[in-house]
Length: 393
Image 1 (cartoon, rainbow, N blue to C red):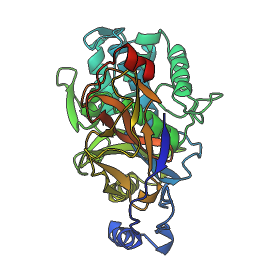
Image 2: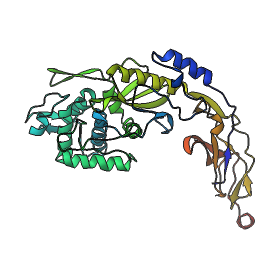
Image 3: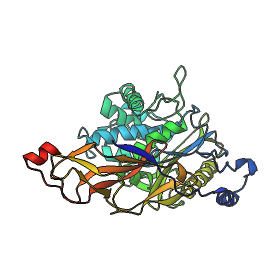
């Protein structure tokens, strides 16, 4: 790596645009709800106990409020149950078409369920749909037992996975998120950790298909799966992910939407009403999408960089290099001046070098997070030198 440079596009204030958005966002907003235009992440208040919005691709936090406050996740926890099953399918350990036999324990689960009976058999895919669409607690137990042999063993897998993902404020004690029984501990997590989990889950396309399905037939059409997420079909680009509710947790939802090629993930926890969690999520996602603007970074593709690249063993000692393409980057408004341009080039490059060959990368970063990159290419060919060239170069 040769050098790091700061990139300073023009600064664009957004206080007026944010104010206008908030005035139109819905009832119950006051001057105290309007964040400081220079504050990042934005601290947006609401009827939730905690909330966060992140960029799904980069993990950059856009909006946050008590994002590390530990609270019960309720059924949002099922995202981890689903993720572990999907990962084992991707690794070939399980298949969607294999048969799962329902245990007595699974058949006795309360709360949201699809009324599985002891001894019934379903495909893994059917039970995953019941879990992801209908938030079925009995399906969660059946899936966990099928993979790990018991729910206790599956919970161990959940906690190991959470630790490996950096979910440092999370502890799982169930596979479904129901309130703890007597002498049992409660599942605990944070909005930040749920967003971290969702960021991995959205990489499984089938999870988004199920999460954006309003209804689906189950048990050969004798039962209908209903999605409790009222945002499905009512917010542009929204295709997931998971709601949750218990008395202790309040109304929660981890949501994701994609607009203009940008995917965001939001989490709200502890809302007082079902309608409230939908309203707050709509507000947070809209605010998050409104934060972005396109900033031109490289408009001089083809023009040589200031410093040439040293060539080892070539007919020439140096070759001029340039950005391989022009680039616009999507960046939160008011953060353009914080972008960093990192030039990644070796100290020297071994001949021969073809014209147009990629010899390095130009990486755009924000807060140490890589947003995007373009190749750095050689502007001309450099042939391998003879013994005299190699000696001199």
